[in-house]
Image (cartoon, rainbow, N blue to C red):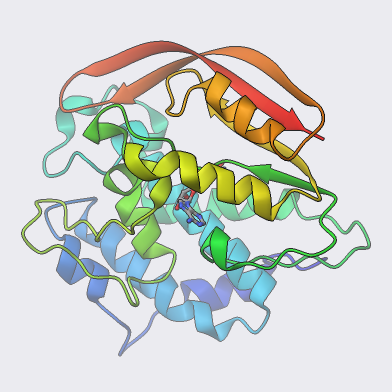
Length: 265
Ligand SMILES: C[S@@+](CC[C@H](N)C(=O)[O-])C[C@H]1O[C@@H](n2cnc3c(N)ncnc32)[C@H](O)[C@@H]1O
């Protein structure tokens, strides 16, 4: 891929619209960001379709999502309303989303390179894919959450919605932050996780399997390694200590955990 967001593409994205969508402004007023920020998000989302190249649309979406992440205190969408007590003078909180977006377009433009191969991206249930000829598969599934605050959708629902302009998503109107419904995944429940890992390893038994795992996850490392040994002759784990900072309501939870890469070949 050689496509970047050049001047004309950015001009199209920022162009004012008369009859553009207002979904974000209407839904998230008083919950996240300023009214101007919300209108900007609606404008850019509405203009996305004016870019012909899917690769350019993907770059614009990535820049938009990162802009929202930078502007949101602690980068999580569990907190809403007046967030001035989080304001420690950080530049990221001062810039408008539009200013962030202009910067992020440049950041993402700089990472585009062409390695001469064709690449495909799919957004699908891992169990619905029929992999063929995969040399190496990197798996980073969710683990059974230790606490509800650990849940991906709870933290990042706004970005998940933004990635598809909430199309096909049901907003839980009764929630303060207008969360979307959490999609079911067997990895998130104790009663189904082990079977799900077994099925996953079986699907990719012909490939080198690289699995991300953190020491606070379920199933535990020994269990995962023994599941992997059912399909792989050699299983090795690489360890790296890691300190998490979770933003929770008004407090920060810190946890020392080890991150592992478990490799089966
Ligand atoms: C730990 S996150 C991955 C983070 C990612 N590696 C990154 O760096 O941004 C786990 C992801 O697995 C996805 N997921 C959960 N169950 C899935 C399934 N059955 N099929 C495909 N993806 C699934 C979740 O939507 C979530 O985005």
